[in-house]
Length: 532
Image 1: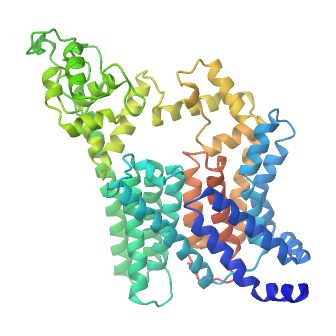
Image 2: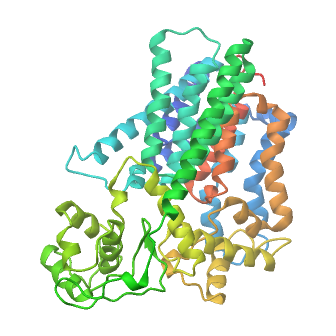
Image 3: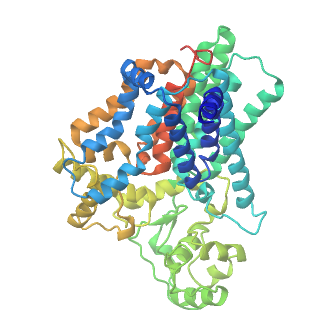
C-alpha cells in the first residue's frame, strides 16, 4: 500500500511541485498565514521527494545556490557576538525564506518556460484580484471605504505591495513585448491590460518607492527592447519614446518643484491687523512655514477660529483629529492651503467636505485629489524643507527617515568592522536615540529603513561586503543578467532596499528569496531568455 502510494507520488510529483508553487504565488499578495502554510507545504514535498544524494550533488556543482542562501547563514554567524538572543531568534524565523527558497528551488525539478509562465500568470491574476478589490473600496462603492491610498495594501506594507505590483506589471510587459511565442490576440490584450491597470493602481497607491522603481524599470525595458530591434527605424522610434517619457517625467517634477516654491509676496506694511469682527490678528512675520505658497502664521485669530470651528464640527478645537494630530493645527494649515484667513470668515467659507477632510487629518486641500501625483510630491518637498528648517520630524514619513539614517550612521561608527550582531540592531537604535535626545516619539524610533545600512549595522564592514557578494555573484555565475524576467525582479528588489528594510519582515524576506531564486534557479531551458 505504502509502495503504491510512493509510486503514485513519484509519478505525479512534478504536478504537485508545480501546484505548490502556484498556490504560493496565489496567496503571496493576500495572506501571511496562507503564505506560511504554502511555504511549509513546499518544504514538506521537497523532503518527501527524497533523492538527497542528487540534491547534495547539485549544491556541490552549483555554488551560487549556497552563496545566495549564505545571506541567512550570515545571520547565524551574527549569533556569536549578539546579546539579545530573543530578538535574534525572531529575526532568524522571519528570514528563514532566505535559506529555504534557494535550496528548495535550486535542487528541485526544473521547469520549462511554459510552466514558469503559468506560475507568473497565476501570480498576476492574484495581484489583479486584489487591485480590483482595493479600487472598489477606494472609490466608495461599498460601505467599507479606504480613504488613505496606502491602505490599499490591506494588512501589508504599501512599499512591499508596490514591489509585487512592479514585478507583476513588468512580467506582463515582457510577455507582451519580448516573448517570441506567437499567441492569440486575446492573450496579448490581457498582458497589455494587466500592465496598464497595475501601473495605474501603483500610481494610486502613492508609494514613492514604487513610482521610482517603475520609472527606472520602464525606461530600462524600452531601451532594452529598442536595442533588440533589427529594424533601424523601429529602434530609433522606441528610443525616442523612451527619451520622451524621461523628458516628460523630468518636466513634471520640475513643474511640481516650481509650483511648491511659488510663494506669496509678503509686505508687512500691508498686512491687516483686525478681523471683520473687530478682533486682533496674530501675525508671525518671521515664520516661513507655508502651504501652497501661502504663509501659515499670519491672519490668525484663534478666538474666532475656535468658536466657529466648534459650531461646525463634532471634534472640539482643543482635541485631536482622526490621525492623532492636534486638530487646530490641521485646521490652520488647511485654511492656509486654500488661501483663507484663520478667522470666522475663513471657517465659514469651508464646505462640509472640507470639514470632513480636516476631521480626517487632511492638512491641505490638494490631498483630497485621490488620483493626482502632485500631492505626494508636495508632501515629500514639504517634509524635507520642514526638516532642514529645524522642524519636528515626528510622525513625518520622510523626515523620520533622515533621523533613522542619522542614528544608523552613528551606530556604524561604533561597530564598523563586525557590527552589532544578529539580535542587537533594534537595541542599538534605541540606545542611539537616547544618546542623541531624538525628537522622535517612542513609537517612531525605528530602524534604518535602508536594508544596506541595516546589514552594515548588524554585520559590519566584512559582513556587508559578503552580503553584496552574495547578491551579485550568483547573477554572474548563472549569467542571468541576460534574462529579462530575472533582471526586473533583481532591479525591483535591489532598489527597494535603498528605502526600506526589505528583509526585516516575512513578506519582504519572502519576496526577496522567492523571486530571485525562482527566476535564477528553476529554469529548465533558455527559450524565454532575452539576449542582451
